[in-house]
Length: 80
Image (cartoon, rainbow, N blue to C red; front, side, top):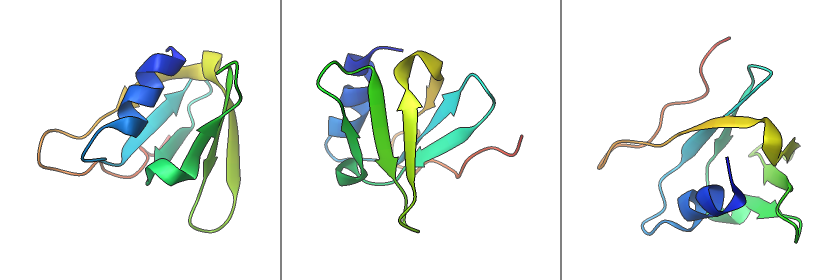
């Protein structure tokens, strides 16, 4: 996964929530573009959640983005 691919999903207009899947089996939902930010190098990303927790993710661990089909929002994270 590259930072450009991830930024394209975050900057899509209209924005549609999506799920990031990680190599360790975790799934992280990105619900709003303002809840996502990255360090200048793009290697580490931060995703804030509605409960005020923050996920800190090394981009090298992102295996897949679950993007919603046109016209439908993404489901929540898959159960591992």
